[in-house]
Length: 423
Image 1: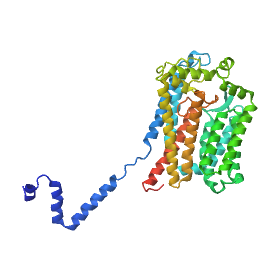
Image 2 (image 1 turned 90 degrees about the vertical axis):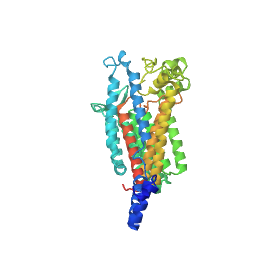
Image 3 (image 1 turned 135 degrees about the vertical axis):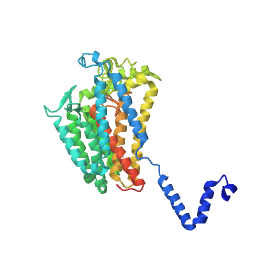
């Protein structure tokens, strides 16, 4: 054993460096310092490439939806309407829809955000043509008196769901390109108003007022976030309310639905227009705090219509109770919150289209979830809107997943720029 090992046996690594320095001089010291600095550079950033919590929240909603669609639809085959279906029919179809949606979502994630900006007018125009095509006899498929679907084999595609996504990218691109005219009614608001009115007319012809409401909220919500004149926006809200009142006043069917909403427990209303609402409220009442248990719903036994689509939240409330409802609300809150934060980060990085598109996804998911839950809980008049990422419906699941994939792509590009990279 040499002298340095005898004198300092417990600090061999530090002494090795000291003796090497003393022998090799300043060149060895510089080499060691350069190695130390390069080591710090390799581990200085642990930023993930995507938002893991957002992905888990989305997957959680999808998995809960898969289980609850099966639970809500398993008894439908016992009724005359679905007598030719197996008890697993909706589970299999929903599983296929989820598989297709996730596959398309992974492919969508690879599309740069600037491509959506570039082709947004073409996508919007193509979707308008689909909304026209669905009204043509022989092309569109009618269900329960509404023509909203185009048969595509594995699933019936609903153009109104694509329009919700098209409205996001079109409104975001429009707002960025017309930024200097947003204080003007003629050059700023009027063109978007005409586009939304055109879409609204086609959607009302199906009819699909719920989709029209969501599209209008998306388009004008993005305009508002983009900096439109406050007075013009206030006037727009007034026009929207006046239009809704006019539509209801001219439609006896909608008048009866509003009256049923005001007093759902009145005998005639409970047996007719408020039938779904009263049974939905009874489902929540039976659920209490912790629910009746998975599969224990009574209302899904041919009492509550559309239990696997528009009123799936009522089945969740009955089987999983108040706790299950709170979990669902939290998951939607987390997705909307993250979408707004991703949008804000994009705007701070001077990515205006990406920022507005991300916030558009938040508006879509947030408002549609709010409307669906509000209808199920009796806070809003009955309106046919699915619960995003949860309800049965191939088109809705597909377009929700594409929107989330675009949101994750925006977040991914934000993280590249924050690392100092280039797009």
